[in-house]
Image (cartoon, rainbow, N blue to C red; front, side, top):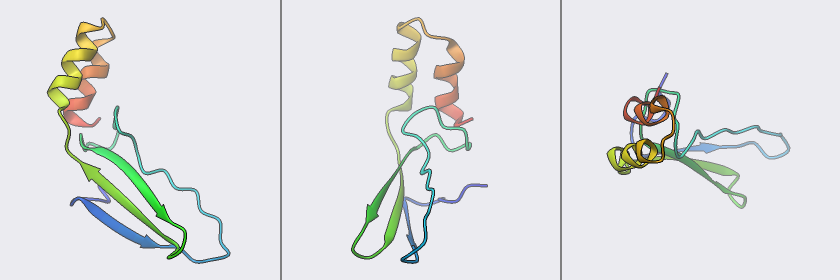
Length: 81
């Protein structure tokens, strides 16, 4: 399930609770979304902002292939899986 179909989502966190947050990955995605994922935590508002942004996937794939790494690592970037 793709949580973030757009570019950004904000989630308010309850003070006094502990959270384990995994925003995803800048590379090697596994959620069928090839965009880079990251998060920024606002400790004053107790809010986390999750972001997805496009990047030059084809160029990153080409560099992986040129480095002689396994093709699956480059191919995965195209499909996010």
